[in-house]
Structures are given as structure tokens and as C-alpha cells.
Length: 522
Image (cartoon, rainbow, N blue to C red; front, side, top):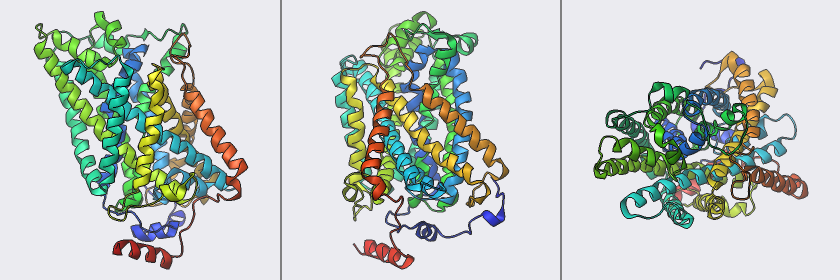
């Protein structure tokens, strides 16, 4: 991207100078490369997590044609959102990300815009962590079921695995940014290699495939909702839109990234582009492995991709043993990617919590903002992220559709937070001071498309997804969104509007340097 107007472009400063200009000290260690910054977002998008964990939802809501064609369509629309975010990220490379941007871009009522953007980002971040690690728990349970008969139909089995996964991810994040950055770098190659392995096995090993016509044109409605395709097909886009979330991680990690004003925006955009291509290949390969005669069984399985693996491989290995072994291998590949993904999600979530509490916006902010002086990581924020995700997943104990609701909550919460600063940036017009990474004259076209798309999906994913609508199948995403709006709104009116002034400046450049020297001496 090029610079549109030299006069409105910020001068090039060092990372620390840029952070000081934004009002913050360099409290977190800046050890991430541009590739590592990209790797965090690519890992959280995680096509081997989102595509596979919500694949069964796609089979119910539209089937093969919606799964295969919905992906590139949603990917392109997501690219518009990501491009608009990236331009703002270049101007404000700070861990606060979205809520900080809203505060600085609002012409009036900046604190209120910042407050609500931050709370939606917090909701989305916690929910995306829940969705990722809950999906990993489903797949781990499926693997344990194949290997040891550990049933996938007992809900508390999944909850126990889920809690264990969150615990491991919290511990990994507590070790420090070097460990996380290294694992994220490995994760990129794991994802790319994993897609190649899964697609190759599903293409070359099975004797029977569903065929191109079936893959690209077949429609299915197994939702229990007797409504036309005009409703079912859009609902099915959740599979793709949920997967294309979490790339704001590149913004949240900018305080730990070298050349953040360009590396952060590039991380956002490249993570979307590469996921778009690799994810489409994965979905086509998996969809062509469906055995049409067993569609009802596969779509109704607790982990539909695992059932597809087994059914497809059984067409070659009639004895079953080899097919099960290969299916377990493919599950291991997917689980590895999902575990990388969940670890990175807690990383990004904790940085957002750290930044939001640094500015006093969360109850108990002084506690959540504390930095471990040995690892220079926000340890308390890490465990708040893990605990919040665990709480959000508990309704699965009594609501079998809870996972779909969690993914809807994540998508809605994050995208509202994504588009708020874009809308405010559009209102600023040419008074917006561009960073070194810019959309130039395309800013307005890209930005308004992004705003329109987010309004559409926000309404869409709060609608009923399965029927008949009962307590067991209710999409409680709308409840979670209303609760957050209600809590944040009441908290704002009763208390916060009298003291929350948006992102706080920690001090003068000299005071910020003193904070940094003190941290280095500990």
C-alpha cells in the first residue's frame, strides 16, 4: 500500500519513540519479528481449528455448496475489514488496539466510544479463546474415543478436557514472550504442512469421493428450521466468518514487535490472505471426502470431520484398523494446530486485558495490569483470559448448541470492535494522520464496505440457527451481547463516565524512560 498524502503522514520514529508519543512506557519486551507478529494472527485464525470445529455446523446450514463457496466470499469481505483495520493500526501501534483507536479517532465522546469498543473487544477475545479451546477439547475427546473409548457424548468429559487445555495454555503464556513467539513460528509451518497432509490423504487414499458436482452444488438444510434458502445460506456463513477472527492479535502484539507501524498492519492483512487460500484448499479436500450415503450420520456426529475421515478411509481399508489409525493421525494434526491456536488466543486476549486495565477500565484494573518482572508478561491478565473462557463454555453442560452460540458471540463481539474505529476513521476524513502503511485513495471504499458487512453479520449471527427453538437449542449469543451492552452501559452511566477518560498517558517522555529503567533493573 502507498501513502496517499505526505502532509498527513506521521514522521518515521523508532518503536520506543512511537510508543512514547502514544503515552506509554515500553513495559513489555519487544522481541517479536514481523514474521512472528504475522504468525500470531495466522495461528489464531487457524484454518485447522475454525474450519474443522465448525464444519458440522456448515453441513447442517447449507451443506457442501455453502461451505465451499461461502469461504472465498466471506474471506474477501473479511479482507476489506482487515485492510481498514491495518491502516489504523499503522497510526496507533499499541497493545490497546481497537479501544485505543476509537478514543483517538472520535471527534467527540471519545471516552464513551473507547469504553464500549473495549468491552466488545473483551467479550470477543474471551469468546474466541473459548471457541478455539472448546473445539480442541471436542477433537481431543474424539481421539480418546477412537483410541480408548472415552465417550464424546458425555458432556462433562469435554468440559474436563477443555479446562485442562486452558490450564496448559495459561502456563505456556506465563513462561514469557520468547516461548510464545517460538511456538507461533512453528505453528505457521504446522498449519501449512497439516493442510497438505490432510488434503493429500483424503484425496489419494479413499476409493470413493463425493465428486466435483456434489461438492460445489449440493445444498442441505438439516437445521430443523423450515425456512427458505434465503435464510439458511447466510446462517451457514458462520463457519467461515468465525474462522476469520482473531487477526487483531497483530495489533495487540505491536508493543512487543519490531518495526510495529508496518509489521502490525502486514500481519493483519497477510494472515487473512494466506488463510483464505489455504482454508479453501482444506475445505474443498474435506468436502470431497464426504460419503453422500452417510451424510446424515457424518453431520450428526459429535465431531463430524473425524467421522468423515473414518468413512472415507474405510472405502479403501475395509478391515477398519488401518482406516482408524490414519483417522487418528489426521486428528492429531488438527489437534496440534488447535492447541497452537488456543495458546496464541490467550496471548492476544491477555494483552488486550493488560492494556484495557492499564487505563482503569476493568474492575480490579490495578491487579489485572500487573506485569511479572521476571518474564515481563501480564500474568494476572493471562489467567483472567483463561478463567473467562472457561465460564463461557460451561453452558455446554446443559445446552448442546452452546458451542455454536460461543462462536457467534466471538464473531459478533470482535467484529463490532473491529469496525468501530474504522467508522470513526471514515468520519475524520482527510484529517486522519496516516501511518507509514496506508490504503491511500482506497481508504473510503474499503472502509464503508467493511462497515456495511459488519452490520449485516452482527444481525445475522444473533438469529436462530437450529430448530425447533427450545432451551436446549436456543442461540444465546443475543443474551451475551445484551448482557455486555447492559453491563457496560449501566457501569458507564452510573460510574465510569465520571472517571474514565479513555487511554491514560503514563507520563512525560522522561517519566516513561524512568519506568523502563526501573523494569530493566528488576
